[in-house]
Length: 214
Ligand SMILES: N[C@@H](CCC(=O)N[C@@H](CS)C(=O)NCC(=O)O)C(=O)O
Figure (cartoon, protein in one colour):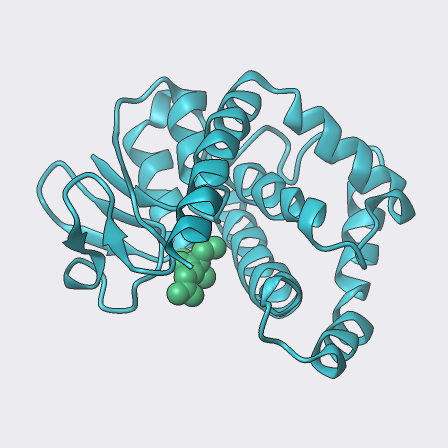
């Protein structure tokens, strides 16, 4: 499988899933500004017209987009690692969490906060409206190690998104101690630690590249 990714972006969740399962993949870095695939300079929009990562090319050459779909596909393909759901209700729970992370956290809270072009009023509105999502997680995670009863691709996605609090100072994780402890626990997990360490180096290179091009 080939994973189109950008450093520290939501695509890191799929990398974590591959590392967790010991699955082989080819990682193709996409520059988020130029939308070029670094390896060969090709136009990523020819693969995904939206220019969004993650994008996965399966071993059969099929192109899949959308984090929730990709994560569930990878979990099913690498079923021995049990990163997905065991039965019908758990499958719905997994989808519940993937949808929650994708819509309530990723797009509604973090994307506007990370957007350098978003006006301060927009950021203030987003914080006022969406910080309750973190309160909700704080309550849910009390006494739990993971979102389901075991580590799953939903945790891979959540730790990836919570990792962005490093770059969103208005969201101080210390205000949600249970969520902070969850994040730190998951960050220490070998698959997550490896993915963050590797992608952080690539992120620094991306920043240097953008600076040089400015
Ligand atoms: N709905 C998509 C959103 C993916 C997404 O927002 N990816 C970001 C990185 S975290 C991206 O590629 N942004 C580049 C852009 O907006 O041009 C999904 O869930 O996969």
